[in-house]
Image (tube, rainbow, N blue to C red; front, side):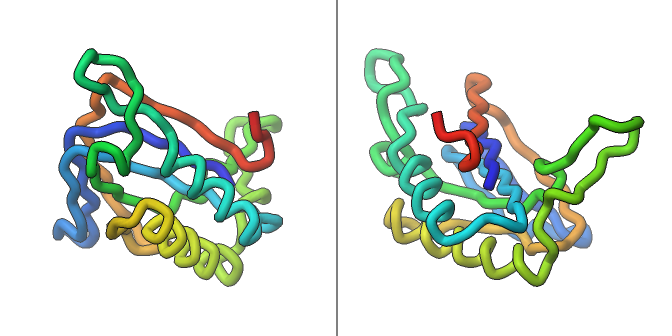
Length: 150
């Protein structure tokens, strides 16, 4: 699993010309799922996100987590995070999980993140064309890959 986490002042996802979900201060999380991903990846990554100290404290130091500041979370599926550009100019998505695998892992991830952070996690709709709007705060953008735990 790979995530791109963006600290935002606000973010929304639009589907078929209508706002599907919106958040204020919080995290916009783009989630890419590989065929080999599993429950262990979900638990590790959700725990990491919940503890990630990327919100400013009273002294302006990034020292607080999403749960510390009561921020919101918007989770969007994004298979293109697993693109390969080694050959030619058209990305290959062979590493991305097929929908029959990815849908249940995406739903399990959203549920586990909600439990771990003790808050509702808003989502887009898996496999749907979405327009994601955001106002990045900082900007702060973090990439985490469960296959490369640092």
